[in-house]
Image 1 (spheres, rainbow, N blue to C red):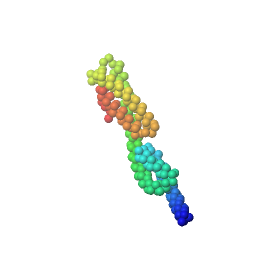
Image 2 (tube, one colour):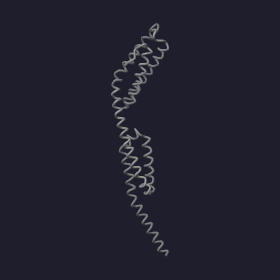
Image 3 (cartoon, rainbow, N blue to C red):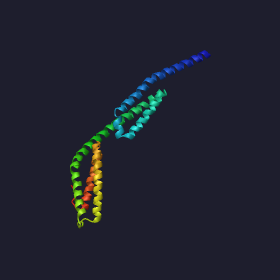
Length: 200
């Protein structure tokens, strides 16, 4: 009786081991496929959708831990959902990348105009500030407070324009164009303070 019981136990263990062995291959493949699928667009996802990527990577890490522990059943149970999430992230990343590329193209087009016009605006304001600074008295339409605010605005414009150029040179046309637009807006405020017509 004891021998029979031991035999049955041994057979059961062998069957379990065989079952685990049968699951190891598919589980290993599932994790490998998930890693490969994610690697194909991971860099773009990290730049455009870092929060979503983090969630998917956490789940993938959990599956890799289960695989390392030999819990192949858990890996195979969770793999389909992870595959679906990776596919969804891939599609969302592609859509976001298309938006970013369109916005970058538009920003580069705007930048061409800014690069041509803003240095002239800054020079014109600087010239007006220099002239008024040397004058005995300010024009009637320019108060001392307005003149001081104009000088401060000009300093800010120079600093922001330098940052805009730096951003563009680093390849971030969207940020560069945004900063350049802020320089132009400030420039129009300063021109009014100095009694001049704003730029179109």
